[in-house]
Length: 391
Image 1 (cartoon, helix red, strand yellow):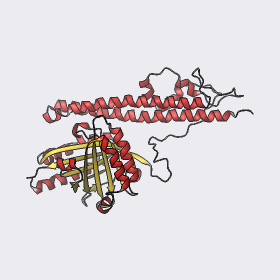
Image 2 (spheres, one colour; image 1 turned 120 degrees about the horizontal axis):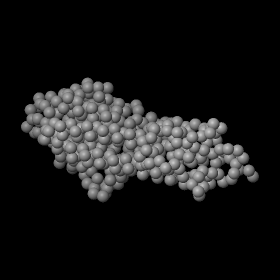
Image 3 (cartoon, helix red, strand yellow; image 1 turned 120 degrees about the vertical axis):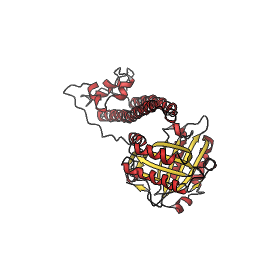
């Protein structure tokens, strides 16, 4: 029985699509990291030029962040290489990846394959850095084809692919940057100065940089670490990108509020920032007045890594009731985070819904999985005030 040539072509298309999907995801992440590094270098230079001791003290942490980012670039390239090898292995199982490293089929076909560009650009000696940073559309330039050969167009690839988004019933996911600051206000502080701090922090939403901003008193501490730390107030804001967050941080109005209203009454401050994939319907404004928010910050035990914590937290997310908004990710601003490497926010319609979560069997199971990975877990609850500002 004659073999259908189209079956080999289908395997070939799967191989090419898989490689390009991996390449595209790596390309986008590398570009984001390089953009972040540019902002970090700019901030380091500004701190150095200012000669202000507190600014200079931040530079060692920022430099460590630069080094961490470069390690992430290496890991992304390694991940892309592994994806390519897996794709090649899949092709070999179909009998279309020959032992001589060229693309072929189990049998000689009568007629020409529709597109032979994959073997040409996959087997060229291109440097790894160029391969990652080259524009996505440049693959055609690496594989000149004769006019007689026509390539079938590949399906359009999404920049934000995920298992959750693959379901037609799920909302599409968008990338957002969450910024959380915890404040420990001095016990002897005049209440009017606390009100001024909160009012001025909330007013920063008018800068039109944050898509959402809320600030107010912490409702209650839910862990030994948070009780011991004694933080009294919280700010949560969201941005479309890391560049927007950097713009907000360096804005004169923000710096003035920090200097005049925060530093003057606070004994301690910590902050965490992470990139999360958020449902598009709530990506800009994650909560409304009266909603209850639980903030969880995790510090990994020695030998554990943040990615392990994120995987367990992903299981927690899946166990939450419908209607609960979540955001979580690895902290990318270690200088102010006191060793906490993962942030997780869950927003409930109200306090009753948050309290109803306590003791839920599935949630408790995931908590048990987290314990061996943790050195410290900080958990605080926060009620979105009616004066919360959102766009």
